[in-house]
Amino acid sequence: MDKNLIKEVAKIIKNSKHLTGFTGAGISVESGIPPFRGINGLWNTIDPTFIEINYFEHHYADSWKDIKKIFYDFFGQAKPNPAHIAFAELEEMGLMKAIVTQNIDNLHQDAGSKVVYEFHGTASTLLCLDCYERFSAQTFKFDPMPPKCPKCGGKIKPDFVFYGEGIPEKAYRMSMIEATESDVMLIVGTTGEVMPACMIPTIARQNNAKVIEINIEPSALTRGTTTHFLKGKAGEIMPEIMKEIKKL
Ligand code: NAD
Ligand code: ZN
Image (cartoon, rainbow, N blue to C red; front, side, top):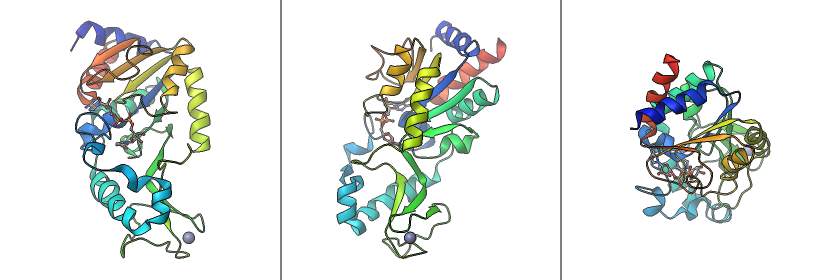
């Protein structure tokens, strides 16, 4: 870990006027949730067709078998790690104004972050496709499978964006505003390959924001968008940055 770079980044964050976080699956890897792409990526072993909207609509029972196994039985157990906690602390200190996350795991909110724009929605609520009622995944009775709306018996879909669906309107609008308003953007754990999410840091950079990136390997953003690249694990680097910020 480059101590001087950590110190420089701490100073930039401390002196920022509008710091925005931008996170991807990598920030949750140390919480036990695998990423989709890259090393140990879920899509290396599982075919993601089950969360294509068209497939889901025509193979409801089949899709739900995998959805429940991956997003509820398994992801549901995860707890925030030191990187999520550092992000919440930065907000508490008045430094971080908002987080734009591609994650659907609710771990930023679990860590205490308040202003979180979920670009790809969330797994923590479920939507009835017939009566549009929403249900908390924590208390939802999935059995018998496939699940049915407890109110109207209709089809249930997790509130995250499936392949083939658009970005939730409010999250999209607010994320674009954050991208233009931030003078510093802190990116953690994203390949920067998923469109249109990957536009957020690019727009921030075009508006002259400093772009700090933490990742175990360079991403699609590192060369052209990032101004300060910290190579390593989010859960190890973020606490180091926080230590330095607190000394300033
Ligand atoms: P990704 O899966 O494409 O890439 C993950 C990135 O994290 C990679 O660049 C990898 O090098 C990096 N990484 C891995 N371990 C890390 C660590 N310990 N510290 C720092 N970086 C680390 O993720 P993505 O770019 O966010 O896009 C995939 C899409 O998949 C997102 O839209 C998201 O909705 C979804 N997704 C969400 C979750 C979640 O909610 N936790 C998990 C998997 C995928
Ligand atoms: Zn219903």
